[in-house]
Length: 535
Image 1 (cartoon, rainbow, N blue to C red):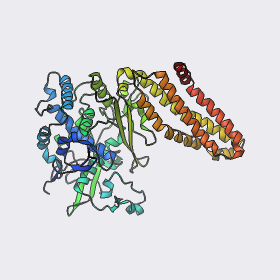
Image 2: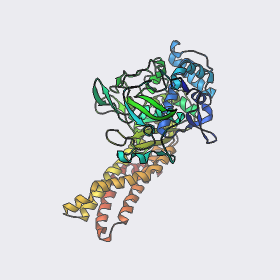
Image 3: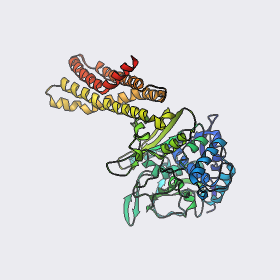
């Protein structure tokens, strides 16, 4: 096999320009013109996230080794690496574009690792991979759900109205990066035993990114060139600077630098061609971490169970982005759960960096199709905008207020609707255990809760973005939201009882009264303080 399709020069990455036109560009073009592109625009947001991490790994490596004008100077060789890193970051930002020659000089050094087809080192693959399972090309896609019924799978082999039999080299490259990052759980033989290796690394995260006005600005804002302790990372070691690992299921130590982490090879993959058409690929488990101890991943929400170390917290499709605010901007006393990206943004704010009044976070994830993650599921793509002042130290009291109001929303959803549902069912069927059981209090409560969260979603986002620490009055904003939340909760219940038969009027009145009582207890303090402030 000869070297073929160099991704440094061949167009394969989808971007959106400022004329709102999607185009395919090469890896070198991305860096040359990143300031002229709004964002990545591939087939799915998860594919974009996977490719974005590849781009970040390159930017961080070049950033550590070249200044903004393309002069070679490794920050780790400097007397004070942290000072140089911060100065260099601001210099990159003020320059407004990457030095294309520096990126070309660096990537050309590793050109052999960026051929999609190569006799020894094909990009993101293992040459001559013998172990693993062969899959039809349809399985490479991350935007098609596959039926668990093998007899009917052929019905799902369609994308854009066309039957999928093979795939272009450009699209294969995109899905190759995606598959490594978000692949479903696969069985892999390790030491003669078959074991599930888990989903790809990005599939294990509650991925967060901050959104910039351009691809260039987004990459710099998400750079995180300092670790969680405010120190320089170790020497960048992206996968193409390492010897290829070919054996399946290799446990590796936690990375001490971001390019190594961002290019983690969760799968051993190989594209299979027939007369220049990619019709199949081979896959088996690749590198993995035995635990998330000493986790350096900065682009994820975190959680901690009891006395365990922090672990990635995945997004849930039914949970709106604003409900994850407490995990994004953690309260004082929970510093070890603060995402590394937020630490980096705090550092920039402390240095009086100003990129506008509003900061917007994007939350991307994949909720797999079953409990064992053996099938594709639902994509998660949420945005959350807020005042940049909330990130600063002086925003602590506001963060506490917002977190408390999110907790109150949960009380409304779980407590007040439960009281309503339980009371209504018991009043409708007094003493009739069978009918009470069939009425299913939990299902009714969940139905009302879902309606409530759906109706308050946009209102909460508008309320959050209206908060201006330093200008807004806390008691007034608290009262303002509680009025909105209580009104919407009241409307949800009223709409439900309006559809009830006349014979249940008394049951509805009793249930509605107890619901209002619980609602008033949840919001009693805020209403009192808010009225006093208004007076």
